[in-house]
Structure formats: structure tokens, C-alpha cells
Length: 408
Ligand code: AMP
Ligand code: MG
Image 1 (cartoon, rainbow, N blue to C red):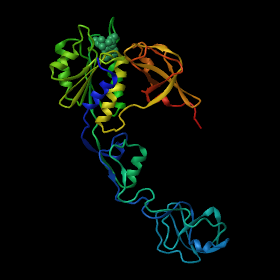
Image 2 (cartoon, rainbow, N blue to C red):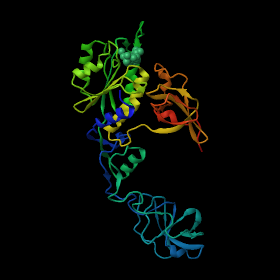
Image 3 (cartoon, rainbow, N blue to C red):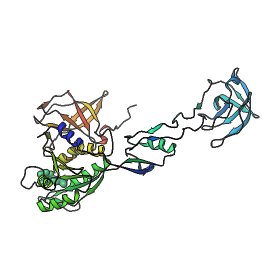
Image 4 (cartoon, protein in one colour):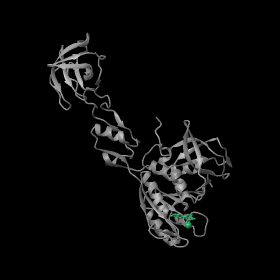
């Protein structure tokens, strides 16, 4: 049995970064840039006004009020040929290009206009209200670096420099094969001893959330030949996730089948709870995660091992889930010798996090892993976790840090 840290290191060592593809800008959200994107343009292209007002020569405002003759008007989207000469002004609007001769924009609120003359009542500082050319982006600037996980602002910046497509890492195709003779499809009323194949849904959703493309295969019973046929086919995907059949029961054939299919075993069994029977292997750069069938174990193993692998495949340099450090609200016993992932609720109190363990830590209770869950990491060498002590909590669900009320 190996430690969590060693298991994770072996997974990441065996995980390749996938190749690249070109996508249209609207499809790039959440993807990882595969190369630096360099702008050939300046944004803004020319100095422009940050205000509605008047372009002037600051020297003309030595004494206020100052009266300047308006020689032109420049609505957004147009550019006047006229220059601002001494004693004159050009009327402009937010975003208008600053005309030749002008060095300052006076905002409209500090003026009064009558009969083609503007009276400036209050002089701003020299150079006020002008956004320089290239203030946002200079030509030759890297606007999106390789490894950036693209967010809305990145898409906006790329659009502003005229990049309609870009190169991103491919998303992994992830085959999901649930094994177990007790499993039935979601639209079937389970008979005695039968269980709905919930793992297929939970894992497919987790894959999608991690940026992968799930390919859900039909349920496979616990017969060796059926498992071999299904896994042989599913190994075509970049990643294969199986659920069930990795324990020591006499119907647990997944490990041996993977061996027979030529999958190199990286490890079997990790000193952790839940998820001890996890097995991981690889064949020709394809990764295989033999997840325990227990739904909680399957999702915890996904969060700790599979998700980082899928993120790394997509080129994400920050492949791991975020962690907060939280005070434990109540002391608990844990399994000695195993790293325990304790399902907790996170609450912010007086600016720090408090973790409250869910009443049941049974690995049969999947509902305790719903959107707001955190996984408090109980160190392997302890058998009790003390109330008031601080532990890392893996933020497993995006909702865990969401707020019901604003913080400001
Ligand atoms: P196993 O790892 O095959 O020993 O399964 C452990 C437990 O998880 C058993 O109670 C199974 O019924 C349950 N289980 C296995 N596969 C699934 C699945 N795909 N969906 C929901 N529960 C499952
Ligand atoms: Mg089973």
C-alpha cells in the first residue's frame, strides 16, 4: 500500500500533456492556451478621451474661466482633420481620438458652452483625461501566456487585438465503464439487490467539470470475458475510468483484466479512506483509473487523482483543487495509518474558515459530497483530530466557498 502523496506523484509522472488544436474564440472559455499570443496591435490604437468634454491646450487654461472657440466636433467613430490651435477647443466624447495640438481633455461638467465658445471653469492637470495609445496592450506584448486558463477577460483581450481563433490543448476523451452485476440503468426500477449505476452520472459530470469529454459505456456485469471485451474497447480513449471490481472480493476482476490487457500497473491500494482499493495503470500513454465502486470513494478518488491528471493533460499548470486551511469545529476519531478525507461543511467566521464534519462519514452516503462539500485532510499518522486544530481542506465542490450574503 502506498501513501497518498506517492500515489499522486506516480499519477502525475505518468500523465502526458495532450496535443493542441485551434478553436474559435467563443469556444475557448476554460481551455488552456497552448502558446503565447502576441499582439501585433496597440490597444487603444491612438490616444483617446476618457471623458465627454473638450480637447484643449493646457497652456490656454493658465487663468480660469478660459474662453475657447470650438473649431470642430468629433463624435465616437470619427476622426477630425482639424488641430487644436491656441485659443481653440475641439468637442469630443468618450473614446474619441485626441486631435493634434491638444494635450488635455476638460470634462464637460467643468464647462459651459454658448454660441460656439466653451468656457472652462476649472482647469484639470496637464494631460488629464487622456488614455495613451497602447495603455492596455502594446504591439509585441504577450496578451495571453501559454498555460493560461482562459477566462472572460482573456477572451475580451484576444478579441480586442483581433484574434478570432487560438491554439489550445486538446481536451481528454474519458471512457467511463461501470462494472457490477448488481447495476441497472437509471430508468429501471431496481429489483432486490440491484443498484442504479449512479457512478456513470457522477463521474461523467466530474469529467465535464474538469474540462474532459466523457464517453459513457454500457454497464458491464462481473464476468471476466465481458469486462475484458469492454475494457479492451474503452482503452482507445485518452483516459479510462472504471468503477467497481478493484477490491479483494472473488468477483473483483478489473485489476487482473487490466494486467491481461497489457496495462502497466502503477499501484494498487492507497493508504487512504475512503478509496483504499484504487488502482492506476497506463498503456501507451493512456491512463487507467480503476476506481472503487462505492460512490463516495469513486468521487473522492476522482477529486484527488483523476481531476489533476485531466487538468495536466490540458496543460493547466495549476492542476490541483484549491485548498483552504480551516479550524475543525468538533474533534473526531479517524483511521490510524490512513490519510482520511473527512467530508466537511465550510463556514467563514470572523474572517477564518471553520470546518464542520458531516454527521455521517459512511462511504455509502453520497449526499454528503454534494455541491458545498470540502474534504478535510486528516494526516495518516493521527488517530484523532482535535477540535480547534487547523487542517487543509480540499475545496471539492465549486459551491463550497460560495456566499449567501455579500462580504461587503
Ligand atoms: P465494488 O467496488 O464493486 O465492491 O462496489 C462497492 C459498492 O459500490 C457496492 O455496494 C456497489 O453496489 C456499489 N457500486 C458499485 N458500482 C456502482 C455504480 N456504478 N453506481 C453506484 N453504486 C455502485
Ligand atoms: Mg462489484
